[in-house]
Amino acid sequence: MFYDYNAEIMHNINMLCKNAYYEIISVKDVKKCISDGELDDKSLTKYLEELSDMEYVNVKYRDENEICLAVLPKGRAVEYYYNRREKENKKLKREIMKYTVLSSILTGSVFALSIIVYFIIGKI
Image (cartoon, rainbow, N blue to C red; front, side, top):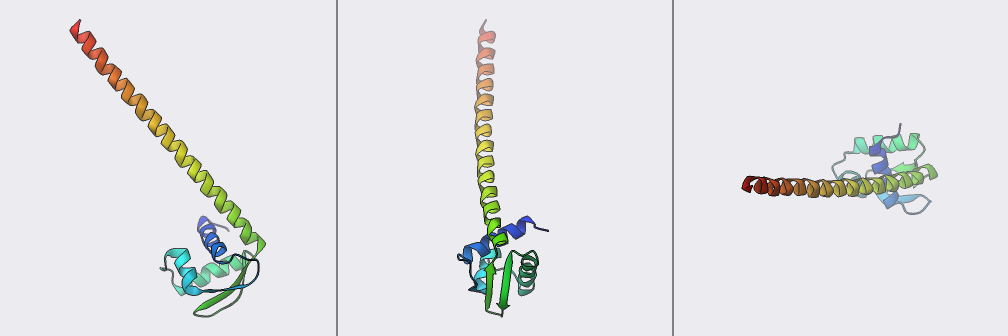
């Protein structure tokens, strides 16, 4: 099953592997891209096996310093999903900000109007 953390990992692998052929990338770069370098070898192997089983990447070989892999078309399609999700998140954040500002303006206006009415009624 494809989870959001797989989309994040595939996005980062797509950023490292720009072309459609096998590329040799360093394990250190992959770890840095995926989790700011906090990923251990066992977890990295698990993630790569998962993505390979789902036919998102094809790992040719891996040693302690390098990984030779190719991102398959299915894995490239994840980039579209990831970019679309990022755009939707930005749009949602803008909408939330817009409604927050509008509700603040409305609340302030109602408060100011109630103070004005209070002082006018208080003087009559």
